[in-house]
Image (cartoon, rainbow, N blue to C red; front, side, top):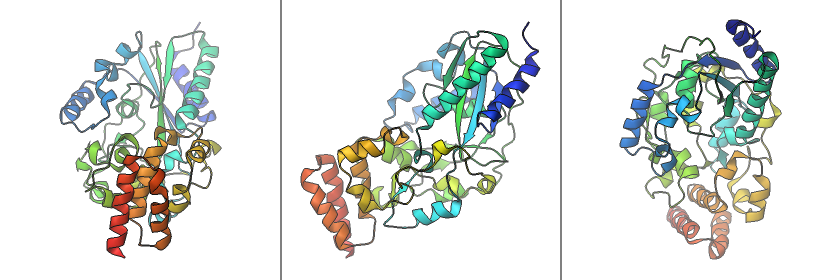
Length: 353
């Protein structure tokens, strides 16, 4: 006989903590209001070139359409913060240093979270016998943040990230879609952002166009990761030294004073990327890029995008003979896309010299 569902959920939460998750919550499938907001956001073309966001119809906001038979969603969050806020801020403020969004410094979180969620599912299976389920972590058409909010893991802030009042926002999310009818946790109904709009004010490219509304086409994470072509010239100076993603809206959030360093070595920085200089990374060959980003979320970008982003960041650095020489030396063998950004950087540096 299967355990009482409430006792099962309590056990599930305990197992989750043992596996390195900070919180487990359970929710049902209702996402009607979030579906309406998504449709409006897509209609405004705020998704830019991320065409996959329009590709799956109702599956994104109807869990049992994505995985037939789904009755409950088990949501998990896992801290990834690798260092202090002061250390991050110091790297961001170093114009010759490369800033990489801190979620990408260690092992690919997709693998880490899915692996731990599969282990959690096996623990559950050992307790109750076989059951239907699928595991996700930013790996399918899933409205992760609304589901996590509904499962009581936090609220969606004005910057559109999920915030937990005890742990801030430096965490990953993952889900288990299951055919088990589990008692749902109370949702995080309250929004604790109040009148604060620091994230809106600090966004370098003004991508947060209204509270809770992000125009991805202006977001540095989109520009440096998802955009495959040329970065709009008017946005290049605003990118600063951010070469992969952007953390500004999290760095300024008052709730992140409660954020805790991750205890998982998976998320420790690799290859010194937390303190790397722009010139060091720009000197990488394609083979070096492939070797040093292996097993990392940074494989999301191509070597061409990597060089493009670095050329922009170097163009935003203080004028320096070493930077100009590096850009000039790289130009002949660079792709036309990278050459365009190198030319922009050289013109900017020479004008400022």
